[in-house]
Length: 589
Image (cartoon, rainbow, N blue to C red):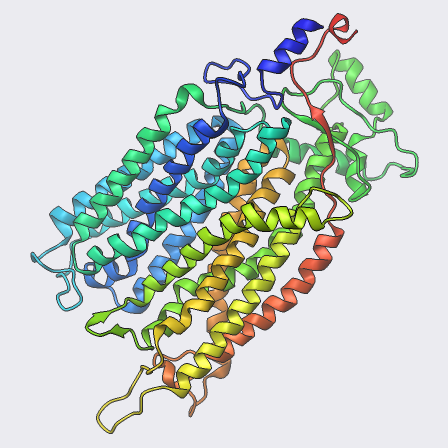
């Protein structure tokens, strides 16, 4: 028994192993040493990705010769593909490779794509010399050069998309949730992870964006490639210290086994008030037994032991057929996924609001007064206020707001807001951001420059800095919504689906982009008449962008009501302690 206690003291209790496959020693692996490496890696990778993505639409128009509509469409497809690849990376990580190997492989693809893009741009695409700026577009390119360009950017999409959901979960793996101190650090990690992501994009949106806008595309792309390579090297240096969860069987096989087993027993008579459910005595190291819940009762059939199951066990030797009988924990894993889906669906409309920052906010800012004396402020650079807001509210929440809520909590002392409560607050703040944007647009239209007989104005005398509140509100909402969402999905997803849970967060942003595009098309189709150009015309001074913002505020308010119902219905996962190596009878005494 003393030997077992000593082992529990030195090894983690969540089932993680070191790089050699041995139980991870708490003092020598993981914690903030490796987490900081991962945070810096995330910042460098984000810098590299947005170093390409922030001005990709300009590259397509100025260098590749595409018109605005075609370029915008291609960027939307590319962005959507990034998030589709995130699901691929999550599947490979959870089922076969594990998070460390998946991160390393996809980061290598990311670096390769950036190097290929840098080489092809400098050597092949910038023809004639000096082209690629606003007043000097490049000449048409051959099919081979165009294919090479798309190969490079989609390698970048594959690498970054496959890497992104796994690195967040891998960072959280460095902390033992069953340890009180490390468990608190694990929660804090997600806040700092989102902060690292934003700080990386800040440099891309300002410094790299400026150089690329001046036509120095190779410089911007090589800087991105160097940043990604430095991030990969830094990631690999932590190899001896990382903690790992070893993937075993595919979680999707376990998911399908429950559905098949429950369907096979659809016709048996069941007394749900007196269920005798199968509780497997064997459990994978690091897994937790999930306690039975009453929801989705049809799935409980998969854990009911029938005479046919016993006969199958006798015939096979010693085990039940997993496609006929599943454990309570396995059934509850499926229930966990089904309970997460309504919450996830409610976050999509928030992502619609979030995507306006990269589209309509920029168009609105470009139609405002952007000059300070002789310096012209790029409308896209206003997103820096969003990043600064994220940084401020992350520290403010962790240092001041969370302790304050913990003191005010009378039902559960010393416990702050739950993840679901924080996500709800994020939705409310996003509504305020849309209202703010709509009010600014009303005043922008009041101060629009008058038209003359020789020109049509698309500007206003209202300063672009009036947009600061809406960017700051979006940043604050991200801290509550996206950080809370990362924590919530990671804590509530079954052990084998942690990376998939992180990928769902990225998929929410992707679907938000698509829903936003669809919403704009519908609004323009309805609002455009023979004498009216619609709410969002090419010349915003002739439209009513404010109405679109207020529409989004109304839709988000309705979404918030639905979210409240889903959050009230949701049942948090309840589990027993993690399974470490099984004790012998002598050790249990």
